[in-house]
Length: 163
Image (cartoon, rainbow, N blue to C red):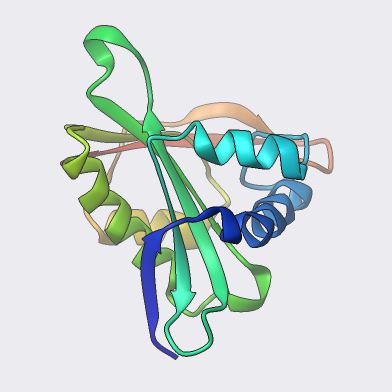
């Protein structure tokens, strides 16, 4: 399987919504609680600075996606944020690495200077190891900053990367 990343199209939105909602429903990584519909999904992805999908070059199947957008406004508008979603069936296939690597390049192309992740859940060890391997630095720990779907709280670990 050969994976490429490319900018999303409206034809991708149903697949993107499915993958996004899968992560939201798991309730262990994304802060969102509401699932996307066709209408809210179209608006959500369109509102981002950039969205990309990870696609199998042979089958054109979508395995993951990311969204890229400013983390703040005005004097902090040069700091961006991103979220990554990989389908459960393709986890462990290095889709996340392809998405993060592409996202860092696109963030720089869009004029951002820093990538900041506000709320990486401490128990999301696969993501944390990937970010650290790619050069992200952890800023600290916010005790009990993430409310898990099962009702308990986990620490969050903010990260940053200088583009």
